[in-house]
Length: 279
Image 1 (cartoon, rainbow, N blue to C red):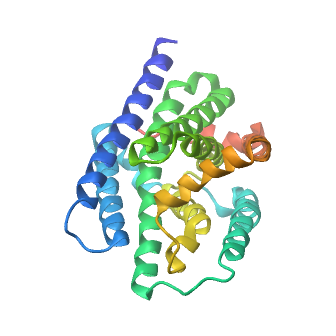
Image 2 (image 1 turned 180 degrees about the vertical axis):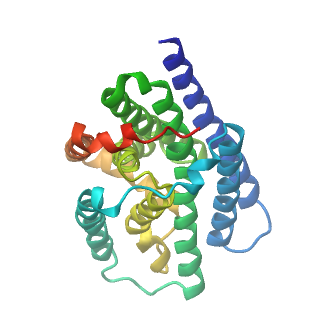
Image 3 (image 1 turned 135 degrees about the horizontal axis):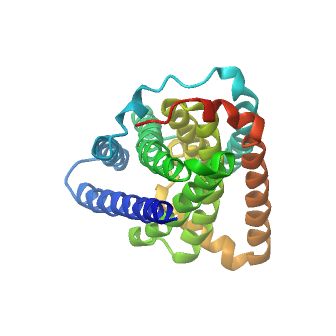
């Protein structure tokens, strides 16, 4: 029990410390004279990736970067379903929001946006799946399948809760709360998928695709605004349509929890239990 409590406490400290440092760096870069919102965003995400690699080195988890993963057939079905239904829905919703757009942003900004989304995926996956999930799985190893499930849901929940720190970016707390619930549910999916595929680079691409399909209209539409403004718009949903927003969040959370549990059935976890733990 002491080892598990220590791992949970370490995970909270690592996640919070990473995000605090990330926010401070982001504040400094965005206040600098570097031109362009997406240029600054990409610089911040690249620094975040460097921090993630540094944390992996500090906790001796660099082998995560070299994991070859399991055969694609072992996780192809849930991956395809997630990408088709979840990302497809977000893509359609984004295209709907683009109707009547006054114009498009320059190609350079669109490219910088796509690169920023990619680096967000890499940096956050290195820290939350590559480091924190592995630390939790090490601590809960004695519980076998139950331990893996515990690590998945603890890591995913922590991933969501730490999004509350976005309130320090000037985003209303109500909007941040909506984002945290959604991010937590998405975190369960990503953690379960990592348990199945054991390839951090595949997770980084999936994460980047999640973010890209959820915000692509921001970078494509000329007056699409910033990431912070898009997240802040959730505050209006919660205050203007509270019941609909809450029910939607509950439904999505329940669906994502069910998908994660389905991916973590005993038969699907046996290959992980047979593999040697990352040192």
